[in-house]
Image (cartoon, rainbow, N blue to C red; front, side, top):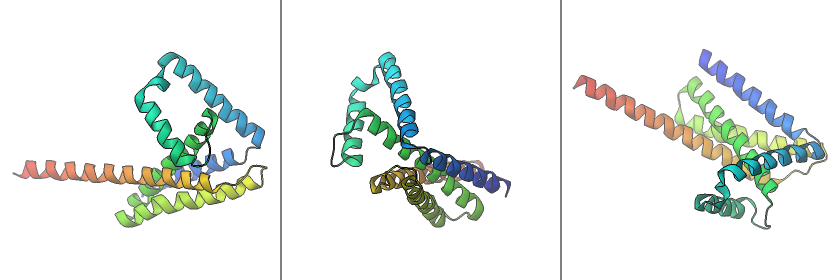
Length: 173
């Protein structure tokens, strides 16, 4: 019970963070993503990761996936990656809360995807009152983050359970 309360608290804090970001005026939001982009450019100047094959393949995949009708800038990719990352974590937290509370995988998977998607829709609706446009593409990116986060935490728990069972069987034999 303590664990599920802790995870619920984390989810509520994470939702608050999401709404904090979506409540920013367009100029503040643009400055935030611009600062992150500048920071990543500085990191790239040191590590030179944008010249690697895996980066070019990942960028190409994300451009096709997230921007089917335009060529995105680096800042566009940073903004969509932030959407993806926020909801990736929210998917993990939502699944974890549901699983620690009910111990049912199917319901936990549904919770891991549906709660973040609902928050994504409300988040975009909130942005429309802040002088920022609401975007179906953003909801889709958010939902993709939640789905991938949920699937990864589900696979992690299954793997953990498998290793525990194998370890238990070996001790018995």
